[in-house]
Length: 226
Image 1 (cartoon, rainbow, N blue to C red):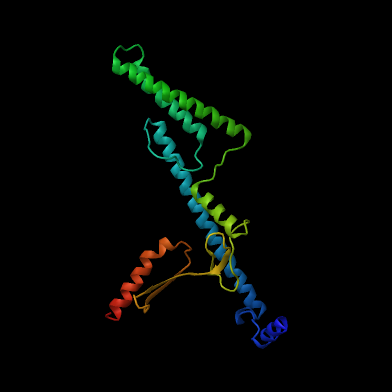
Image 2 (cartoon, rainbow, N blue to C red):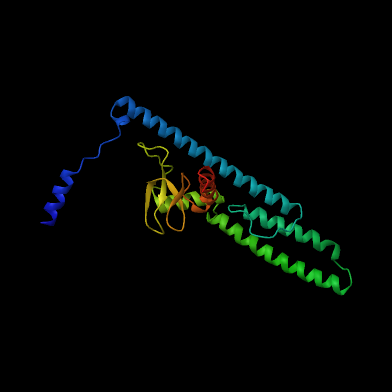
């Protein structure tokens, strides 16, 4: 009975049809062309982000090679062999003027530097082993984030564009809840649930939309003198 009722309800509801713009061959060709243009723009943005990551890696390496001691974690995907070699060279330069110099402070400094050298030499050995076995991940932070998002959302092959709505983006539905093509919306309301402002975007990250959403709210209140 339940199945028959559901079938009857489905039959009574209007059937979904493709948008009118896709009703002709010319319309479909235009939609595909627009979608391909969006994919090219996505690829260009990805390439720009990857180039920026490579530039950060190179800048970091050059600073270490010049003798700087940098705090924090090196950029993702950095050449670990080159990094550890630069650290070894830096510690060797620090150690050289202290060799055979008498004094407690100098002895303590030599001890600390030699400790750093042993750590750097072990790091270089690990990096060389990883390089020899092909276990090195050269992806920068942008590529890693991109691949992680695609693995969560699927598919993994590359950028995805909706032919019926090329401006839509894949939005993750909660933690592990899959994804849907659409838009990210923020609604600002008063304590009594009166809607003050609505902001719509392609950005799936809510944190990035806080400032635009609050700006929309303030503009609505100013315009309507709330």
